[in-house]
Length: 167
Image 1 (spheres, rainbow, N blue to C red):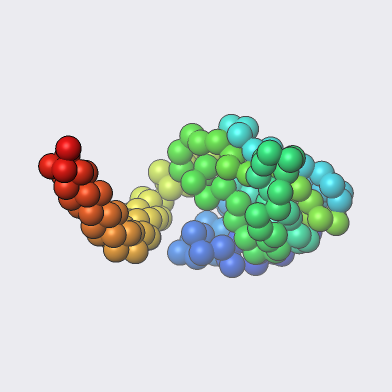
Image 2: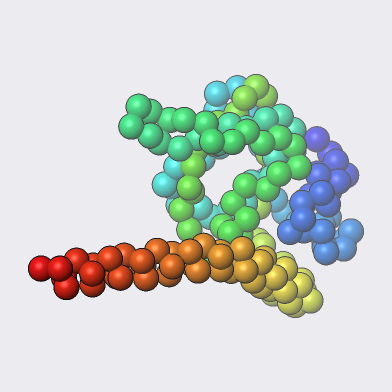
């Protein structure tokens, strides 16, 4: 793929949508493009994640280890960023990524991404805002679950109290 095609793919990634054309060009030029064959492992579950992987072409099976081997939990195609968190912090891969047919990926190392946001602080500020909004939405979505758990805890405590009075 050409640099122009890589830039077009990177532009589709929500995390990179605020990057200017010049910033995307710099990122695409500095990232590593790799062509992989069917059955290749892009990364394995539990390994150290030092980069984000953009699927530029093809499909990838995401699999987790279970009691009877690996089981597919998702399948993703072109325009998907795997390892968004790995671009920002040291972490481990939560799943194995296996190529389904020929696949082209763009690997963005964390060091490169951090250098980009250091050179362009407005990008860092925007990424912070996007992630903060996402975490707030997650907390809001989990609040009803917390309420139900508290309700169950109150019921269990009341039942235990009744049981101890009966003894």
